[in-house]
Image 1: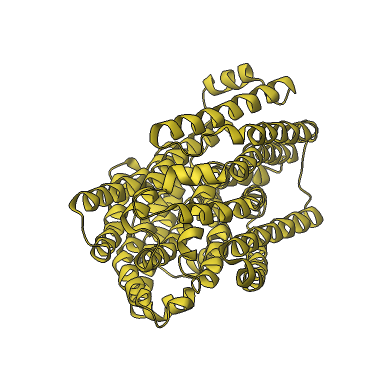
Image 2 (image 1 turned 90 degrees about the horizontal axis):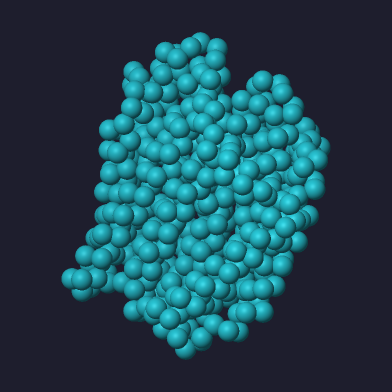
Length: 516
């Protein structure tokens, strides 16, 4: 499981780093005014749908269903089932895209009510419609990635999203070189989103993965209706962080530049969340599904315990690092071109509050697969809905008094509400199995992370505040590297991890899915 986790997290890390480069270029191209708010509101809408489908979300329903059909009826039946899923998802998304295009003005007014009566409304509607073709490609991409994950083949699915960011970076770079007007640049960039999705689909179709779903046939029979009844709640639940950000954007749209500040702050949260959370959802669902179906309680406990250790060991130090180094990180990544010092300060404040919710987001990613493996997608959905209501209620109150920072704090509170709901319900219904090794390691992981956070706090004042460019990059990079080294050494000293054993485990042949 750890080998697969590292494969997915490495691919996600590469994609997130390219995403930072993309967003840094967007900040330089569009700044934080009306054009940027309109583009980012539209992009947020597409991103929510993208996350609903991709990054492990569809695993919640597809992998258990596909494994059940394959184990019961054989490979041919599983391929036919996948072909019906692929065709039906694609047809459904095309129809939904047409409806969304017709209702786009109303949708933008709902997700960004602050745009009503301003130029941002028309710009957001135009940008969102130009992005819609992406949805037609996202469906088949997601199904093919889910089938590969079900067979334990994670490398291609982990690295294929790189094409999305590479295509957008190429478009933005060209626009910057041509000095295109901001409004026109936003239109061109919005149209490039669909091209990026097409490139990702073509790469997957060129591989053997396309033969996992044959023959292609659109069907909404009893089996497909049952599948979608499980899939839709699971996809919504798996995209909890995006729904919380949508809630925040709805409230923030009434405050100039607040949508942009929250967006760029959330991009920094998505780096550790992607590395840990997406990998957790992608790898843990098939692992736990096989363990639950086999009836081996020890295997279930092992998978859940290692997932909790990995989640805590990676999310907690990332949270402390983002809180302590929020402003220098934001300045380094985004303070270019039209993105000024005031924007950096506001974005950094929002980042500090959003970071408090990062452990909760990762905990949700670690807890939800225990439900998905048991074909229960409604409980995570209800937990997500509860967190959404909490976030909206608090954002209305705190956003009025504290602006973007108050909204960010509300999003963090909503995430913790969802995580606590999942933990309570799972403990009561089937009991989360944490083995003796995890009970011993988890307090030591927390201690090591707190020590690393203390070191970063003590050395934060050493960063040169007036430095620019390469000097700022070297200073901040050195501090982060020192924190990582100290954290790693503490894990070794506290006997949480043995790097020699870990290296040996990675060299061993991977254990393939026996049915693959």
